[in-house]
Amino acid sequence: MLDKITHNVIIIGSGPAGLTAALYAARADLKPLVIAGLEPGGQLMQTTEVENFPGFVNGIMGPELMDNMIKQVERFGTKLVRDNAVAVDFSKKPFAVKTSSEEFLANSVIIATGATANWLGLPNEQRLRGKGVSACATCDGFFFKDKDIVVAGGGDSAMEEANFLTKFGKSVTIVHRREDFKASKIMLARARANSKIKFVTNVAITDIIGEEKVEGVKIKHNQSGQEEVLSAQGFFVAIGHTPTTKIFKEAGIETDEKGYVKVFNHTHTNTEGVFVAGDVNDPRYRQAISAAGMGCMAALDVEKYLAEQEGH
Image 1 (cartoon, rainbow, N blue to C red):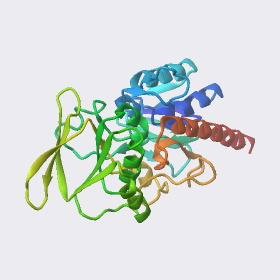
Image 2 (image 1 turned 90 degrees about the vertical axis):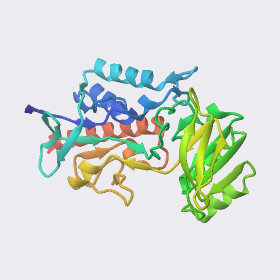
Image 3 (image 1 turned 90 degrees about the horizontal axis):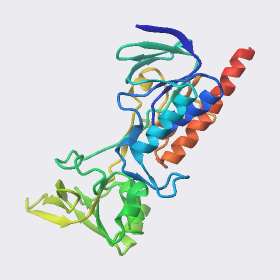
Image 4 (image 1 turned 120 degrees about the horizontal axis):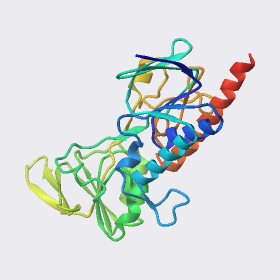
């Protein structure tokens, strides 16, 4: 089924980047259409307390913040489609965005599909998310004051997360499946020099222990097969993120070696009329507020782009 209207802008994604882009586009009277996914709201829907988003003195629950954003964009006339984008065609104008049941046309598109944290796939990992299990130290580190924390990973992000967590935790243990680390020499040296950080290497993490909240991490030594439990109240997975870019790569959008959408001139992609915002382009900051800021920038760039097209 084809939605016959050619929209000014379609925004794919409904996290802080997509919804902020929608807010600015809607207030510029561009009548944006948001392909919001089956579960709108992005990664913050999985987050309990958000204390670092400006304006909320006592913090706010992640789902409540996203629900407020959705209501705000709808108030200004944004239309949300609660379905996933399954394909895009950027080879000709108007651009086409297909969901599982419909096809939509647009003069411009903002990619704001985010990135998902890579998880280990442990039996209790998802059950204990928000109850001591996290994939974002800068988001959640504050909640682990004077606690024992385990960080899983061996790359730069694991070293960075571990160093950051020592500001709060009583102890931080980096657990890695090999002896050697992927982390750069400088990041590894920094972690080794931190007296609060311990290393447990050559082990596999087999599960997380705890009923209501994290109480320990079960490990198995690779050589001896011996199992033990590391006592911990926090478990941070730091094995990287995967940006949601598959359908865009297939449509010719350029990405870097890790799959993040490349930016040319502010928020423009390599395809004229296609813009990007948020974690799908940002492996560095990965914060709700930085994603929201990029959403604002992308919407302003779209507004300028569409005005220039009309002027031709």
